[in-house]
Image (cartoon, rainbow, N blue to C red):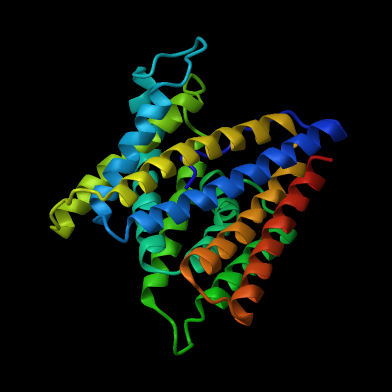
Length: 302
């Protein structure tokens, strides 16, 4: 569950820098998958609202402790600007529904559907930013949505409406990434991370009121899982930022899809989930759509 969209890096890096960037990206995706698994494990004992509040508070403290290195203070006026408010709404939706998804549905399928975020970002950019989208990218969008349908299997006997939680969460993350493009430049990684996790606290509190479940004293296992999820999540975010700033964006970005391997693998190993042919086919289609978008973006940049 990465708290903010990636920041762009200069293009045309050397081979060595690109290899380093790829390594950072793979490490980030592995860490994000582990974070999701830890949240899923903690959700076995903790109410979702309480889990979100604990996780969000931990992330806020971690990003508040980030070195300032000049720039705007943490409570800069731009933090309540319209783009940040819009971003917070999408973050709220994305975080809440994705945590519900990984708590209530198989981690493998939730991870697969989440990988359509770049597809939805392209779709949103064409409508809200009036970006020109060629036929190749439109084909990739259609391909990615087809992959989601293969994973969901809406006509199959084992279809669960709970799977749509991931779809809503993914749409929220895509909206958040689009809104991030309009965030005032004075706000950096520290701000986006801090306010992203603050939104998680708010989402947890809102869900706790709606759910009505009483908070419980976390067991040692649940508390350890939440603490580890925060630590690994912050590490994952740092690796992601390092990846996007080290290698060429068009070269590094496709390796986001290694998260499919880690997420599906952890679902099978840690939670005893089963992966069948249609699931693997859907994952392949979604990854192909994302790679096609990345290839087209690289070709367009010449």
